[in-house]
Length: 180
Image (cartoon, rainbow, N blue to C red; front, side, top):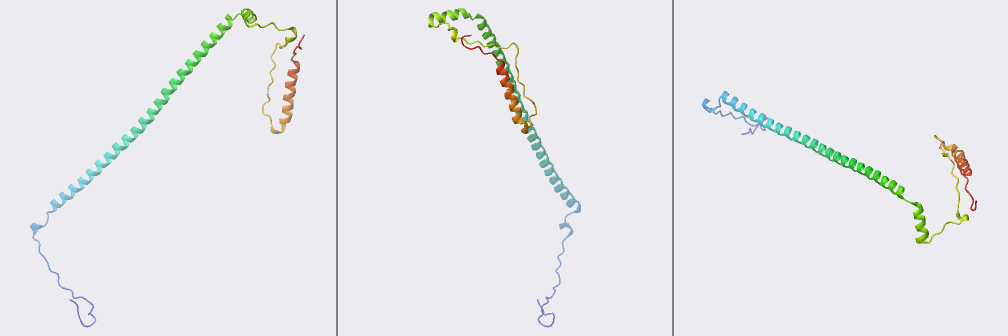
């Protein structure tokens, strides 16, 4: 209810509070409140521990899975490496056998027999004297070494020197003329 006149016209009247009496038996016991609160805290802590344990187990399994994947890939790589090395050894063995077979074949080749069969079966003839070319091969090797560290400004000089060296080498080779 409100006042209707004066300065207090907008102010509400304060009504007295009604009290309600609760018997002591209706209020919970302090020990019971404490026990219920402790029980709810224990349940919350247990739930958190189980959640933390589950997260920890998941992380351990994840790390173990990643590690297992890495070890598996490395095992595959190692296995392929072993097979590659075994293949390389087989290739070397086959190359060795091939060279031995070529050498045995070369030793068993009879050039006189081949020449006779070429003349008799194929009708080939011995070359005329004018068809023979003599090439004199020097007793020692001639090796042209490249200089190390050639600069860009010295390229023309360097190439001229190489040209002169190669030209000198070919001038020393005696190639017989036909009919010699």
